[in-house]
Length: 161
Image (cartoon, rainbow, N blue to C red; front, side, top):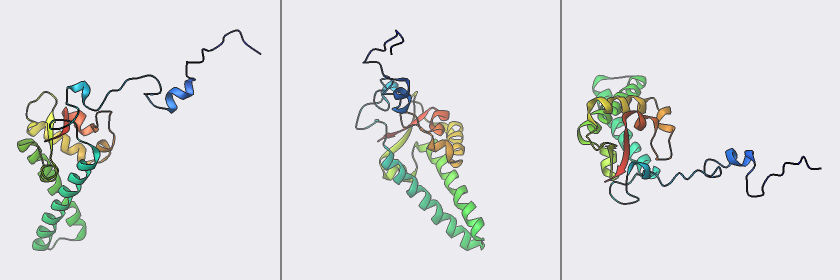
């Protein structure tokens, strides 16, 4: 039985548009960083997940090392040492990103933090980015340009060197 309204065969059902994501709905998202003018590859291109994760582990490991040395000198409890690791990580991420545009881990992995307008990140935006990074969840919510909420708030992106 027909209701008189036939749907064209090429038009997807409404469930196919949201179940398959934005591309299934016909949205052309382009490559990461394209809408901001970043190159497709090489220096200045948006960095992928792998090296960013390695850089994070390197930075965290170095922060644990420093906090352990301080904890041993001041006889901190394990809880104080854990909080010390977080504080050391936050301070190094804030200052190094603000002043050099990169942390030690990012430098070793060939990455840097760049503002979308090309200016240096600066102390203020780096502080906002770092505080959101320390909350963890904003850094886990990414957009199509591989920018977490902490990057979006600071108007930054992590790019290849």
